[in-house]
Length: 206
Image (cartoon, rainbow, N blue to C red):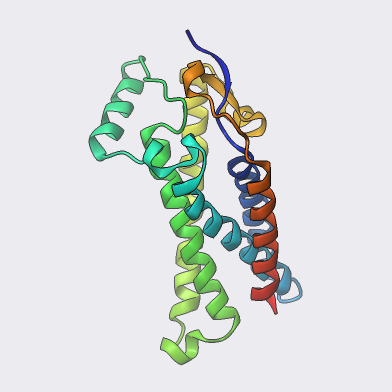
């Protein structure tokens, strides 16, 4: 029998919302020379969160691990078919389609952040002209598209499963079997993530 259980730890939840805030800030300041440093700090913070999240995907709590939600194409197709049939399969953590959206988001943030920093340091010119700036803009536009798909998926998933997925990323709780609950929310890991992300943002902005 399913009940409300703790699924998302603090690093996943805090990291998620900091990425949202960082992306919005970077987007709003991207065309302003006066706010260029804010743009760089926002991008650096996102790079810090993503680099920690990549590590956390291997050593984190159960549902934070890539092994829990990154599945093959067949699993994604089967899940999408279950949605179309009106009988969506429930996953305690990320569903297969959402899992690949997470991977795409992390990869594009990493690509956009690194290329943006190279452009900020004016290293792109030494290594190939305007490629860093063009790569940064392409990554950001692709990221925006994946964000839109992700938001659509969250809406569809919330309606299909009759579960507020946005709220679950705030509270950490979802419907699931008691045996699938995580035992610890890992607050110290979240603190380490914050310190690392702030330190990296400061270093990259110097």
